[in-house]
Image (cartoon, rainbow, N blue to C red):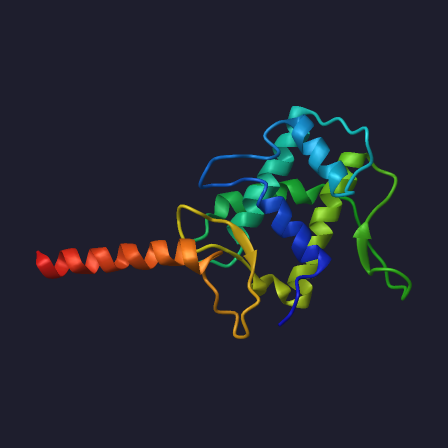
Length: 181
């Protein structure tokens, strides 16, 4: 069983700041996002974000969630908007053996550095192929992001007891209605 990398844990935590089922958003305001970013060591306190910077993070979060494996059709507009956010992210690519070959460029605004850290984590998952283990729950009302630790990468739900059971029960009830009707 492959454990999630720090990059996977970061992307999972970032996307799960929004609970689609309950509507709770841990980063609903710029101040809450600033606290989350500093809590994850993506920025140093004190951090103040503008409404535009806050919106950029929310756009990136929606795009990442959209890009994760699921059976649902992809909404290309969400991906395009997230790519627009990433277009201005300062990332440094190095050829040296010391350190990471892909890293946030230093010296810019702290908010851009935090965006770059998220971008680098995403790139690491894609480049290592581990992105296929980070999935969005197939239960449409849930959408929780989870690490698929199954041997054959076949896990579909964040929880078989809750979301998997909910989906299978709904399918069963639909089949029974069709048989009775």
